[in-house]
Amino acid sequence: MAVAVCTAGGHAVLADPAGGNPDASKPPQPGDHFVHLTGPKKGAVVKADDLPLGGPQIQAYPADPKTGLVRDGSRLNLVLLARFKPDVLAADTRPLAADGVVAYSGVCTHQGCPVNMWSSDQGVFYCSCHGSMYDPRDGAHVVGGPAPRPLPALGLKMNDGTPVVSESFNARVGATQAHT
Ligand code: FES
Image 1: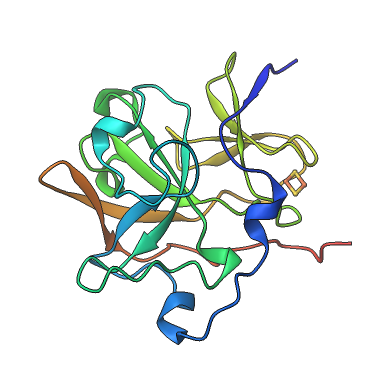
Image 2 (image 1 turned 120 degrees about the vertical axis):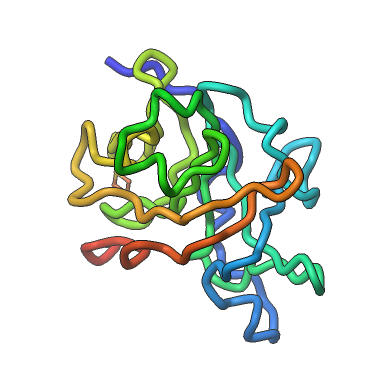
């Protein structure tokens, strides 16, 4: 049985913030960096060195580096960032990563909960709602639980130690079935 540790915020983080700027609801755009959602660095730009090698993940939102606008106007913009040695990444995952940093949607594909935990014994993302697990080294493929498909991935590049979006999500973000 997985031993899961909470990595950050819980369900409340997915409450849609009030706001009026439509750019805040746009999905991650090429050139966006990320800001920490929680913890002592909340609101700060995510640096690769902030990410512990080998996990766990951190939760973040994309942000426009030119204006500082954080794209937290949509719950679907929650992103997970994690860092691994590049040689442990699957061949299909490596091209999307930057210096071993990978980025995925933080919204579970089962019923849309935030994926906010980490299985320390299996080294995978863990959704505490119903126990889905995703392997971040291998395209966030489902390795346990009821999730029907992987977490969508973002392409990254590294800009002076800062992970930056290079490619949009490679699949539709969000739950596959209605949240009941
Ligand atoms: S919503 Fe994540 S496992 Fe059900």
